[in-house]
Image 1 (tube, rainbow, N blue to C red):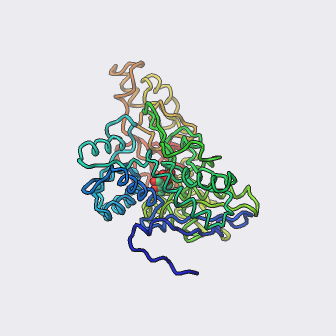
Image 2: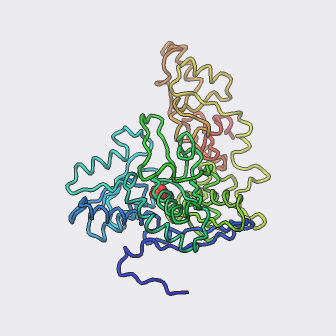
Length: 477
Ligand SMILES: Cc1ncc(COP(=O)(O)O)c(C=O)c1O
């Protein structure tokens, strides 16, 4: 084995990541599955490559000059790459980050000397508070500012044409037959996949790993729980736009992965392979395993793991977080005959027994009239229901983020009886705050604590989606 490289600058330590065989997760499969370990890049993610490429291109094109400021809208990792490259080259760096991203990433950005601006996630593209509009304003107001614009910047996919693709081709001695990666800006899959197709004369199959409800792979754009990949569309967004860094024919096929499978696969990667990676790595590996199951010994799958799990110790790698959103029912993973999985215990625990006897979930459209809501709630046990945006499509269930309030039969009846609301009036003013949400794996005591003294019930989540309501009497001692 040759000695590791010696670098004169941190910038030379970007990329050059190893391939690691997933021997345990891939056990029993004819085709070997190798992980491209991007968390070993100097900034901890695949985005170091794009950041370096974009900064060098901006300097070359005269868009960024000494004394300048680098601005970017980022789920964190691109900001970290830009902070490393930018600060090292003497620039000010401002990263606007969606408040949904893991807080660990904000601290890492600050540690590297970037200024962090938080922007809300749950707003339509047209809203001035949307991340993209926030960065545009910062650029207008800051002399010498340059917007890296990873979504539309060709230097992003180019980084992967120059580095990631050639590395994989060389590391596998040209034996790679399938490349699997998630799609955020699309830079990775477009650049790496494009290069591998070009050098192999079209022989390499490129597969996109997408959250099930993301629009890239054919979902409706409703919310999902894996950050940094997929494409979400807020229901109030008028005109959706896809990144130019993503070439629409980059992937030959998509594997659409439910959140639970992504998250549990990320946890298995840590526990079984010793690879602590983020949730988008879980999506990618879940997709790669699906692909590999259909292949033979002459095939070789490379799956790209974009970042480290250290940024998600409070999310996917936290049992409490997994339980809170209904992804774990037993309080943690258990050993079952060598495989670690989230087994549903023989004796149902947590809120599962109560949920099973609570009846099917009933929701009310927030845009409904008082009369419609009263009719919907007729005969519903407990007489309380979550209110959801009427414009939301629901083939994947109602995500916790789509619940905008709650409505109770008592409130409607009282308003209709005293004449303060007519049946054809909009529900609006009679909507109460959203019910507190608890995961199905949480305890009855935790549900009671969430209920507090004022709420008429709790919303129970299974896999991050509304599964039922437990009205206050169902939780009584
Ligand atoms: C953790 C993580 N996974 C996946 C991606 C998607 O990569 P790309 O933007 O190249 O499609 C990103 C991009 O920011 C990321 O940070």
